[in-house]
Length: 167
Image (tube, rainbow, N blue to C red; front, side, top):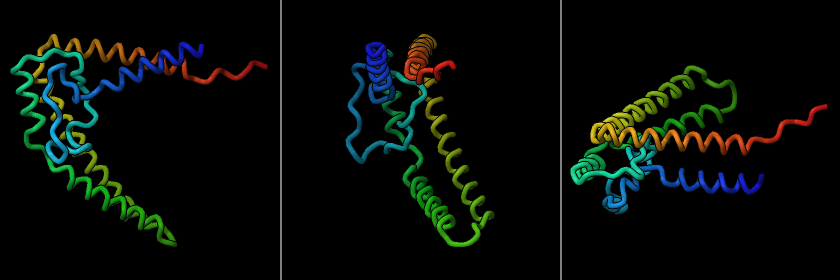
């Protein structure tokens, strides 16, 4: 049982470690130097379509490189705004007395709007990646992700605690 768990953990570590656009394909261009491209919270973070293992044409590589190194929204400003909003929440929640529910709701709504905006931008980026790929490549991505999902389900089943003893 322990060997199965270790094997499953090793497989999942290997699979989840390969997800992302850092490895577009075996001959992908190197990542931009620090300070160029997008930061960790930009469009490169949390990709839905993993291109690992997908063979891209030269034209696709160029289109993806242009997309990744092109103009992107300024996520630093969003992050500064989010930090400021979290500061407001801390102030509201750490002030003695009754919490101002109206202010709390207002800050929460601003955070939600910021998150929705960022998610919409991220999804538009993913749509652009999708549009670069062929139907065959998209099928390969789906097949690979289905296998990863099945393995993750198996890992979760292996990692669940045993049922309580019957009395």
